[in-house]
Image (cartoon, rainbow, N blue to C red; front, side):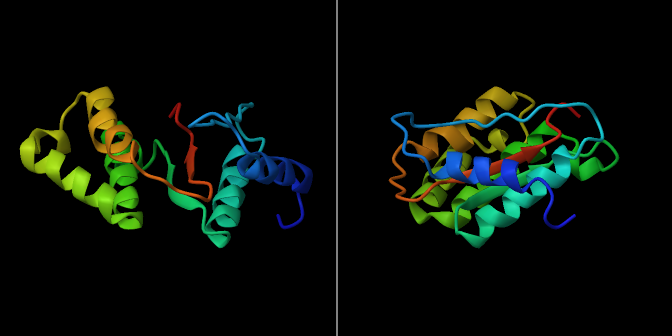
Length: 138
């Protein structure tokens, strides 16, 4: 609903913009099922997209075969990162050409490290880079 949770959305937006000495910050929202975490995540994604901060979003859903697999999560992040920065796209392409098994490996930790973390190490981005992930526990 428009206008709801404005205080929390303002808090999250301020947190995103706040300078930090940390290279990565995570805002972890928890709560009981049905209290509006998905709606809030969607609102954060919309705000971040409007400000040019949204790099990727992934909303897990156990009812959707395409949105309930961790491997889809990692490859979606990698695809979206590649679309935002040619240096990252090149780094991902090199990794995939060297090891084509990264596309489908069941080792999600390795896939995340090789296709997301490593390519981002030299990304000098001035504005926030926001990734919205919802229902990770599904």
